[in-house]
Image (tube, rainbow, N blue to C red; front, side, top):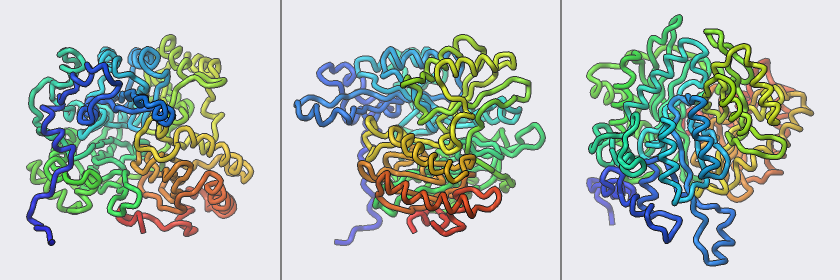
Amino acid sequence: MISDPNTPKKLSANEGIKERSNFLRGTILESLADESTGAITAEDAQLTKFHGTYMQDDRDKRASLLKEKKEKAFSFMIRVRVPGGVCTPEQWLGIDKLADKFGESSLKLTTRQAFQLYGILKCNLKQTMKEINDTLLDTLAACGDVNRNVMSPANPFESELHGQALKVAQQIHDHLTPRTSSYAEIWLDGEKKGTVGEEEVEPIYGKTYLPRKFKIAVALPPRNDVDVFSNCLGFVGIPQGNQVVGYNVLVGGGLGMTHGKTATFPRLADVIGFCTPEQVVQVAEEVVKIQRDFGDRSDRRHARLKYTVDDRGADWFLDELNSRLGWNLQSSREFHFDSTTDRYGWTEDADGKWAYGLFVEGGRLRKKEGSDPRAAIQEIAQKIPCQFRLTANQNLVIARVDAADKDKVESVLKLHGVKLSDEVSALRLNSIACTALPTCSLALAESERYLPTLVDELDKIILNLGINDASIAIRSTGCPNGCGRPYLGEIGLVGKAPGKYNLYLGAGLDGMRLNKLYRQAITHDEILSALEPILKDFAENREVKERFGDFCIRKEYVKATVEGSDFHD
């Protein structure tokens, strides 16, 4: 039987959930009140994502609980939006307190400049959300089919330019925050704070919001620390003197894919034009509306903006955007990125203040043998005037420090056993790992708990080869969805099965070229065996200032991925 091409496609199940939800209310309050289970209903579990929380269970305990015929060890992860990664000491201490009060005593800094709290029981979920809002941060739209946390360069006071980029990111964040009052009703007993929604309608999103999640970043050359090309929508600042005169507009980036589904692939954004700072918010709104109206609502694997742009073409998208704007984007301006890495150690701001870039392995702040980075940052927040910046590489910038307090910061870090940045290898400084097991339901393999072990072994190889000063970006995820941006790692690891990973090579350290599959479903020992001869070749035959990813392309270990659709070739 041949299907009729004119027959509308069946919508995905999530579209019905959103349609029935009454602007994200669903039966969340009823689920929270049900004391017979630590879980909430399947539909409510989809809706609570829009409110910033995921239901999870401890997969380390699944088998034993199943054997005992007990319910899974359900808990909730809460993601806290931090626009541009900017956080005051008071806000840090407020969020940190909740990690002990209701969570499992750790803080996770994410690749979207946000906080994540783990292990929140259902009975404590509402109170935790309320106390997060008491810090003047919130969780609304931290997850779900909406615009997520808007990223900007991690040290915005380094120059006047960075402050302007942060301002633009905040404006976009405020404008695209959902307006539904359901968040305040459910979590805050109707009390509205800051930009938390206050309306019954969604003037931008509509009743069913977007087909999938939407990500925006603002970048300032020459450092691409937000991986702007991996976002649905990106703005690249173009400076003249001490002013950002406008932004190149990038559309169609995104990194998630599905193993075995070649129709899914990571994709870098297209540069389609240029707008002034005053036009950025309007551009952002209209791009979101185009995805709202044209994104694929029948297949969530094909629902991101990257597929809308890839299917219809960047020229079509530009024409549609110009039509909706009522004016045309200008031609894009030239720019150059040199790195996606963070700055580590001390840097001086334009006004004489100082910022310390601190490496946080896996983005995880928790006490472990010989080191307590959580306690160190608590003490700094309490005793030393400063501000904090969460970076897109899961690290932390201790910013706005007086010159007289620099030694105090280092003393506190050393007191709590925290390694200073110059004590950490170049490879480790450029590592990113998603959470994966035991809490992520999508994880096929370890990531955060595995990558440090692999880096230990690779560091030995690199040290013996005499290239320990080489900055090589290594990124790991437990599944192919791309939360740790593995497809932009010069060495990328993607979980394929327990203890097995796909190994990717050849991304650009500037964030402007994807990597490509080198070996499939290999174990830890096989990863080391595959990488050691390549690293040896790199040590002996690299050109002056040649990056590892570029070397892998030049020596034909892998082919360059020019377009996202080339990723599987």
